[in-house]
Each structure stands twice: as C-alpha cells, then as structure tokens.
Image 1 (tube, rainbow over the protein chains, first blue to last red):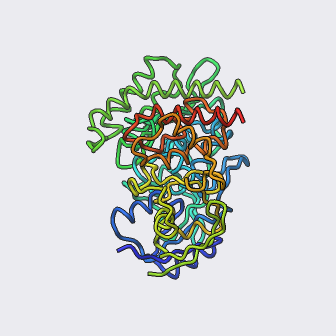
Image 2 (cartoon, rainbow over the protein chains, first blue to last red; image 1 turned 90 degrees about the vertical axis):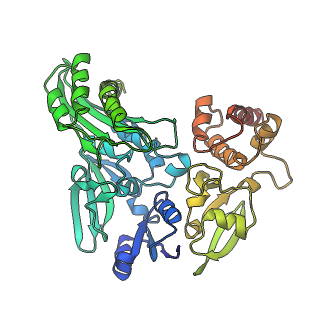
Image 3 (cartoon, one colour; image 1 turned 120 degrees about the vertical axis):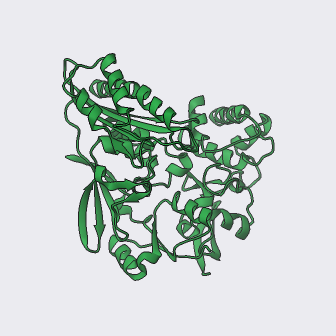
Length: 293
Length: 159
C-alpha cells in the first residue's frame, strides 16, 4: 500500500524535528531515483517521506584545503565540474556513468552513498580517495571513514536519524592520478558487472609512492585491496608489476565476487585481473594530464 | 490519501494541480492535465519515455514526486511547438527524416534532444548519442533519431 505524507523541510533543524516526530516510520528521500523505485516495486511505502531536496546549503563543491562535496550535490553537477574532472578524475568517471542524464540531474551523491549498493559507481572512487563522511543528527555530528561506512549490501553504519551532509576528500599528495572503469554490457543506463578504481602517485623515476585499489561488485560491499596496494608501493611501474597486482587482486584472499543475474563470479575475477593493469595505466595518464594543465 | 495543491509553470502557463500527494509528475501530467505525450514505458526511470524538462534539465517524470514540482518550470512535448503551431526544428527534423516509427519513445527522445541543443547547439554525433543514452527505442535502431537531431541542429544554425 503506497500512502505517505510528504514533507519538504527547509533546513536541517526541520529535518531533525520531522525525524523525531515520525521516528522509524519516516524515510528520507533526496533525488528519489532509488527510493521511488523501491516504493513502486514493493508497492509499499513508509508513512512519511522527508525530502532533503530543498536543502540548498548542502549542494556545493568546494576546495578549502581538502575538497568538500555537499551530500545533495547531484551527479550531473559532479559530471560538469572541471575541478572534479581534473583533480578527482575517478569520481568524475564514476558519477558521470550513473544511470542516465535524466537520473543524474536529480540523483545525489549522498543518496548514491547511503543507498550503499555494492555496485555504487561513486563508491570505488571515494574509497581510493579515503573520503570521510560527515553524519549529522539531533544528537550531534560524527565523521566516518568511507572504508568503515559500508557493512553489507544496502547496509551502512548510518543510524536511522542521521543525515549524511558532507563528503570530505583529502587532497591527494604528489603526482596523484586516478581512474575508474565501469565494466558493463551497455554503454549507459546499467549497473556495473565489476567496478575498478585505482589511484597512483609516481615519483620522477616512475617509482610508485602511493597506490590505492578499490573494487565494487567483487564483495558484499565496496572494498579496498591492501595486499595489492602494498605490493605496488615502492616498486617501479612496469607491465609485469601491474600484471602481478591484477593476479593478486583477483585472488580469493582479496575479493569474493558472486554469481548474479548479470554474470558469474569467475568472470568477475577474470575482469579484476585484466582491468587492474588497464585502469592503473589510465590513472597514471590522468596524473600526467594534470601536469600539462 | 491526501490531496495537495501544487503550483508550477507548465509549458509557459502558471497552473495548479490538485492531486494525491503520492502521485508522480508523470501521472499528474497524463491524468490531471491530460497531456499524454510523456509515456510510462517502465515506471522506474530506465527507459526515458517519460522524459520532460524541468527548468531546462531532462528528468524522468515517472520518479518525480509531484510535491517537488512546486514553483518549477516544466516543459513537455506539447509545449515545444510555437503557439502559432510552428513546429520546433527538432519536431520538423524527426518528421522529415523518419525519426519516428511507433512513436512511443519519440516524446522523450525529442525532449532529451531539446535539452541538448539548448546547451550545445552544434553537437558532435557522440554528444547526440550521449544525450539520448537514457532513452530506449525498440523500433528504429537509433540511426534516424540521431540523424534527425543532427538535422535539427543544422536547421537551427541556419536560422
């Protein structure tokens, strides 16, 4: 039975008041491209929808030492931001491939994160960037590292009365480049079969100073691959090195992709192995592009 | 079920819809305003047959909660032609270039094209394909749709 009251709070204080009033019978909604689908497909709704859509204060992309992205920033805004494309390239690539333009015009970064699909396109990029999430409630504010945020498919550590307000991305050091590959059957309007995000920082002699690898759809949550990252750090970039990192990352110690509607686990493992060298090289190329600019 | 009053701008005219609060923009357009150009192809934001423009940006009306339309400018396919009946170049191009077969995707395709050409009057083919990548067509194979949009861009440039 779909029957809800719809509330459009103008600020966070009003949001908290509504949450207190309705309790667990309320559901938060931002762009609605996940929530409205769930309501329609289940033919069921919460008693009250609390819309975050009009919290204009939470819609921003800022550089004040670290990068700060407001949770209500749409994927389309990220897609059209020169700053994001140049400095946080993997996030640009992830955000620009969510759904379609129609979806990206309303769907928010906060929503993509809090919906916590294991396939979320912004998750792997944010994981390699060590993003921190600011959660606010009537009880106060806390920061959660994105690596600690996802606990299962569609499950996060966010409490029912918390709002994700800000995504903090520390400024990468050195010659850092990133890339995200969304492996999928179509060119648009689909979920990834596997998602690979890599961030690399190289010294002048092509020694890897910093390496971050994140995978989506390879485990119940988005994951980093510390084994392969540690393997790469301190070594000189080469095809053989990247090939080895790919073998490592696709091994059972590092990921556990499952069979699903879209494809079987063995294929996902294969793709992790094959894509890691390709995405790593793209990350390096993106670092070099920054220098040229 | 509560009704709400929603005041917004529809195809250039200020209007008020009095509809159940749980209705989507799509249902409101089709059943309250009887503007049936936007279609429900999937109802879950994947096919684009319901594409309309809100403040110039394309959205899937099937997922847009009607309370959120308050104060916004909505443009549907019915509002594309000029008041005197002159067709928008995109509409003209689709007719001349066989961009329409069954017509079910057409409203959405044209609105996505409109959003593109307003921002990018001289799109490359890849820009056009990207702009309609949220609109499915099961009839045409997309070629004549893409060509129609390119033709429309040229027609606009010539003016």
